[in-house]
Length: 78
Image 1 (tube, rainbow, N blue to C red):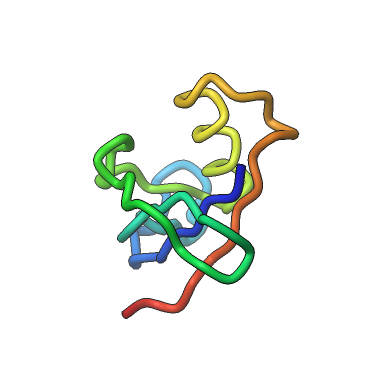
Image 2 (tube, rainbow, N blue to C red; image 1 turned 120 degrees about the horizontal axis):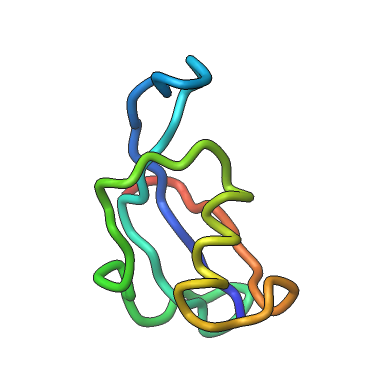
């Protein structure tokens, strides 16, 4: 399952002092070229992710999917 997200600036992590990001919009992609339905409401948009990999694992867990079934791509902010 392919998901597309837009990144919003987060804060620096108080633990690692690394930059983080928040998800601005999350959508399930219809195809490799088309974005599908907005599913942003299924996640906590206030959470500060440390990496796309963390978002990947969060989506797999949240949606009950095997991690290998989740694909993620970042899109430019609109």
